[in-house]
Structure formats: structure tokens, C-alpha cells
Image 1 (cartoon, rainbow, N blue to C red):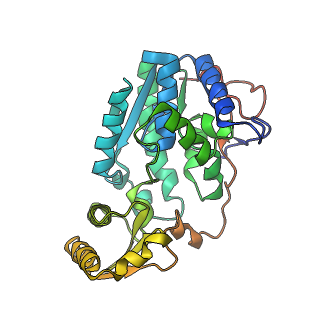
Image 2 (cartoon, helix red, strand yellow):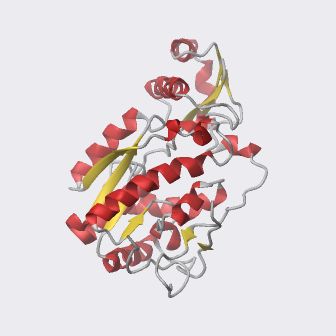
Amino acid sequence: MTSTSFIRISGASPEHATWQERLARLRRDLDGLGSVVVAYSGGVDSSLLLRVAVEVLGERALGVIGRSDSYAESELGLALEQARTFGARVEIVTTGELADPRFRSNATDRCYHCKTELYRELDEVARKMGAAAIVDGTIADDLTDWRPGRKAAAEHGVRSPLAELGFTKADVRAAAADYGLASRDKPASPCLASRIPYGTEISREILQQVERGEQVLRDAGFLDLRVRYHGDIARLEVALCDLPRFADPALRKFVVEGLKAAGFRYVTVDLEGFRSGSLNATVGSITDSGAISPSSPVATVARPGTIPAKRSV
């Protein structure tokens, strides 16, 4: 694994900039690229990026979904339907990270190996398309969590224009609402592997078990949720305001029976409530926190946060 330098957000966009100003800058930057492959998941961040890319570049923008066992089947249908509503071209590539023992072993750099597999596939799509750049939906708020996948992005020249322009989640949701995107209020839903504690080997069966468990919670009307896998135990995280709902015997029975049918023996509720990335509390050193934008694949970059004019292919 080679060492990689990063471009950090540094004066790319003033803190006082409005989401409308950031959006206008995003349009200009994407237009300057000429053609892009967008790493698209259907989440609000990548959805906004793809929507703007289609607006600016038309057929020269292509969304690519990496389909794998850690990508919930329900997410795929929603992503494709949304893309159809604004005429985006979308290609699905199959990633096989479960074939990689480094991913399955679920060390703290798991995300690096997963993203390396994804970006390898996107590299091939971009090469065939002749795209100037691969871009993803990383935003400025993502700096607060452990994201070893950013190293993989750097190694493959993937750009993060939303983060580079200082887009926060509030900015993204405001812009997505302005466009009328179906995902504008969609809760974040990272890959299913993020529900499994580091050091617990990942298997297709466990991923499917978690996916079935989370569908039970959705069917019960919960929005912000996670089913954390702890062997026989399902640890449920829901929004703090939803915790009192478990006092309802009928709802509690529905959830417990559903989780047991999914394969869990015991069902617990985390009294701290929903916390995105709660399993990352075990990570001792966040070495790439704040490392968002990879170094430019071209010779020079005018200033931190800019998008290169072309991509090496």
C-alpha cells in the first residue's frame, strides 16, 4: 500500500456561503470537467451530485452503483427509481469484496478494501466512457467519522466536490429539496457491514440477517435505525424520541418476533439511541480524519478544494 497525500478543505468555500452559492459553484466545477462518472448509492448526497451532474452535463454524466452483499436490496430499487425521475443514466457493476479475506476479516480498515474494489470497477467504467473524472458524494460533515475508504479514493483519483465546496448535510438536504429529490429526507444508510463490530468476520448470512432485521424496524415505522449485530444479540438503535414506543406491548411483540425470525436469539434496545457510526467508538486512532480530497491526478491544482480539469485514464 503506497502512501498518499491528500488535499484538505482549506479556503475552498467561505464558511458563511449559502447552499445556493455552493450549488452554483458546484455547477461551474462540474461543467469544467466535461464528463464524469458519479459513484451513486441513492443516498441524498450522491443523489444530489448525480442530479446536478445530469443537469450540467447531460449524457456526459453517468451514475454507477456498486452492487454487493453489503448493499441492501431495497436500496437498489429506490436508487434506480429516483434516477429515472430525472433522466440519469445509471450502470450497475458487481463488486466482490466478500471474496477478499482482508474485507471479510473486518479489521478497522475494512472500508478501505471495500472502496478499493468499488473504485477499481469505476476506473474501468470511466476508462470505457472516456470520463474526465470519478466523483463521489462525500460531504464536509463526513470528516467527523472514521473513513479509511478515503485512502482508496485518493489512490484512484476520486474527487469529492461536495466536501471540497464545504457542503454540510443541511446544505445537501436544502438543495435536494429544491430539486424535489425523493431522497431529500432519506435517513443515511451506510453499507450493512457497518453494523458488524470490528473483528467479527463478515459473511453473506450475517449481512442478510441484519438486512432482514432492519426491514422489521422499518415495517414498524422507525426511520433512523440500526440493527447492530452481536452474535445471537440484536442491539437496536432508534431515535431517542422513538424509545418510548417500545412500551407498547403489540409493537414490542412485532419487533421481537421479527428479529427472532431473522435469526437473532435475543433482542435488546440501546438506551443511548441512534448514533451513526457508533461501532467506530472502538477505533483508537483516526489517522485520516479531515483528509477529504485526494491529491490531483494532474500536475498542479490551483488551490485546495479545486477539481482537476481532466483525469488520467
